[in-house]
Length: 474
Ligand SMILES: C[S@@+](CC[C@H](N)C(=O)[O-])C[C@H]1O[C@@H](n2cnc3c(N)ncnc32)[C@H](O)[C@@H]1O
Ligand code: SF4
Image 1 (cartoon, rainbow, N blue to C red):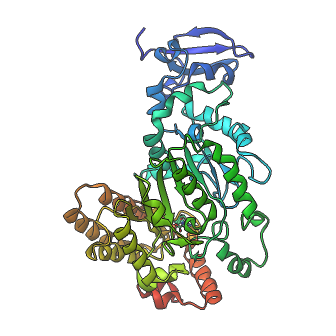
Image 2: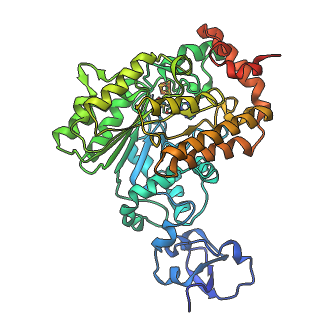
C-alpha cells in the first residue's frame, strides 16, 4: 500500500479495532490531511468511525512526527510549558484566554497546584486535540494571527521547542503526560505595576484598580482575582524552582517584571547555578532599571541571550497619555543606558497597536530609527483585539483609507532601509487587519470610554491626538 491510500477503522466500545476498510465512500477529502495517531484513535473513536488516516500513520502505530509537526493546530506548549496569568489563572500559554466570550482556565494558583493543572482534564484534552490536528478554542488567538499572516505564538514556540518533540510520544492515550517538563517559563507572579496603560486593565496592573472601580462601580464577579497577591507569586516560585535545572527560556512580563521580586530571585538563582545560557525575554514598560538596590543591567550582563520588547505605544506626550505613569525623558535615558551598558542585549520596540496610536506609531518608529535608538527591523507589532472599542479596525472607512496610504508609504520607507522583508510584512499584515472588517459600530463605545477615563484622569484625548479629533465631534 502506498501512503496516500486511506483506511477506515471500525471500533468497539472498548476501542478495540473490529475491522478496516479501504472503502472511500464517505467524505474523506475533509480528513485526508488529518493525522490521527493510532494510539489516540482507539480511545476516542468508538463504533463506526468514518475518518481516514494514511497507512503510514497506521503502520508506525504511533505518532507520525512530520505530519504532527506540520499540522495547522499542533503546538509544543502543552508539552513544555504552563502559564500563570497575573490574576492567578493557570493556562497552557499566554496566548490562551481570557477572551471575551470564553472564560477558561486549568485552575487557579490559590486552589490548584501546577502539577494538578499539568494533567487536568482540559490540558489532556488540549494535547489530544493537538496530536489529532483538531482546533481548540483556547488557541483561537493564534489561529487569528495566522489568518492575518502574522506569526503566532504557536509558530514561535514550535520553532524554539520542536527539538523536544520526543516528549510528545510519551503522551498517554487520554492526553496524560506523566513527566512535567517546564522548559519554557511564562509565569506572571502578580499584577503589580506602576503604570495604568489605556489598553490594559486591572487584571495586569494593580495601578489600574482604583480607576476601574470608578469606571465600573464595584468589582465585577469576574474581577475577584484583581491584585494577585504576594502569596500567589511566592507559591508559583516555589513550585517552579525545582525545574530550574532544565529551564531553557523564560519570558518575563507581568505586571511589570522589572519591579517584581520573583523576577530577581530567579535571575540570582540562575546566576548561582551558572545557567547563563537560559534565554531571557521581556516585555517591560521601561520605567526603571533598578529595584530594591539591584540594577537589572548587572544581572543581564551575565546572560548570553537577553531580549527586551520595550512596550512603548507612542512618543512624547502621546506615549505618556497611552501609558499613564510613563515619563518620556526617563524612557529615553533608560533605553540609552541599556544600549551603553549591555550592548549584547537585543532591544526592540514592542508597541501595542490600537485605534489611538494608529497614526503616531509610524512617526514614532521612524523617529527612533533616525535617532539611532533602534534599527528599522527592531520592531515587533502587537495588536489590540480586545477590548473591541480600542481595535484599530473600528476606524471609519474614510479614515481607514488615509491610514492605509500612510502605512503603504511607511512600508516603502522600511524597504529602503531594511535588510529583510520581515518588518514590512508585519506592517502589511496590519493593513490587512485594518481592511478586513468594518467594526466602526464600536466607535461610540471608544468615544464614551475615552471620555470617561479622561475625566477620571483629568486628561483630554483630542488635545494629545488631534489627528483623531473628528471622531469626537457630535
Ligand atoms: C500586560 S503587559 C505586561 C508587561 C509589562 N508591564 C509591559 O507593559 O510590557 C504585556 C504586553 O501587553 C500589552 N497590552 C496592553 N494592553 C493590551 C491589549 N488590550 N491587548 C493586547 N496587548 C495589550 C502591553 O502593551 C505589553 O506589551
Ligand atoms: S505597564 Fe504593562 S502591565 Fe502595566 S499597565 Fe501598562 S501594559 Fe499593563
